[in-house]
Length: 219
Length: 335
Image 1 (cartoon, rainbow over the protein chains, first blue to last red):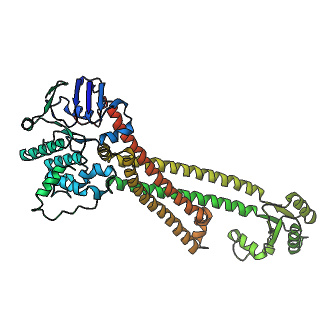
Image 2: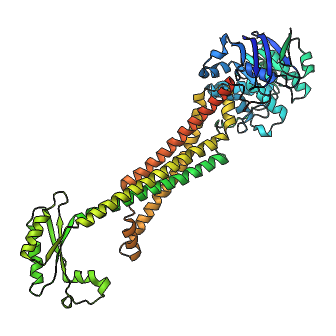
Image 3: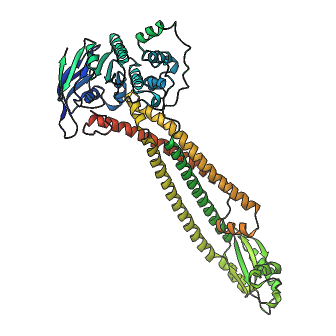
């Protein structure tokens, strides 16, 4: 589904953050992306999300080479990818329900067609009682769960999550992991960037370890 | 979404509490905030000033045109007193002679009382015209489109009554035409300056108000919204703001002219009103004036909406430029 070949990236004239990355993200796969802070995990996720282009190498996304994709076709491609940002990026003037429903709203869907699904998902992530609450009132963990729900709501083909369990307690982390696994069982490829070793130990999954700009993969 | 949450929700159906109600969906762009209110105030002020300037320039042009028209519609024949001249007879003869020329319409002799009133500001009341060698006037109304032959009329008058002098106001008319043109030119210049200031202020104020919403543009872009969708959401929002602001400003300006016109109508023939009328002309705007105000409101609303659209499209373009240029680390979160 996603293929990286000798991909390298540097910011300006600085050193290469990522070097010679060659790997695949197969369909329906599940993998953790880990490594020390500053190793380039978020940068790699942004490359996967098409919000950055590499300074060298080739990236193929959904059978298309990303450097040749016109700008106006990017939104359609991004709709196939769900992303959970480390800083959540929820809109403060919209309620939890409205934030989670946002991807469906921008696709022009009618509220009656998605309302029940959004409410069910919010219950599943433990926000069933917080649907009318604005993000500034939510705790860090609640914001994180709302951001995860927003990424999942349209069943993306690829889910990218940046530290998705960083602000939740172990039982909720376990529950969210179950949600990712369930999503993966239903056909979504999942990439979770995390430092949480205990989370990774719970699942037999591929581990992609970034260190000093290089990637080691343990299947 | 997935079947899993659906199954889980079914499991818990027995213990399900009454469904929570979802509030009516809020607009994607927040309906009001500090920058939006400030923009509305700026638009209202600029619309008021632009409409006021438009109305004032319109008024000055109308006044200058009316001066020019009034003065060029009449000619004056002046008869100087002479011992051998029967003034009343001479006035009648001069009027009759003038009216024989084609292009003349009507002739009025300024009678003794009216002449005394004309001189009253300088010589005071109770003036006896017989004691003073005061010239008398005959006012002839002419057809502006095909005026009479002034040279022939002048020659005929001096042949019949040598004390009669024809003043066709040509010097005055020429000077007034020049003044009216200058006034209209200056007025148009002021109007252009005010409109330019309005355009720039509205553009920059809109961009300022939008900069506070950049995070919304980014989030929409990242959840897969197309650029046109994002732009239309912001367009709708800024169209509402600009319409509210410009209608308020334009209505205030129209109200100002309506009140000034009403005051002028009510206080007609009073010294204050006469002075104001002499200086500024009539405060009546007419249909053109009100249409101009409506056009200004439409221009401001369009301008704000288009600025919002271009700014959003540029923001999205910038986000995508960062994508293709990793050396630009602005807008990017930590690596």
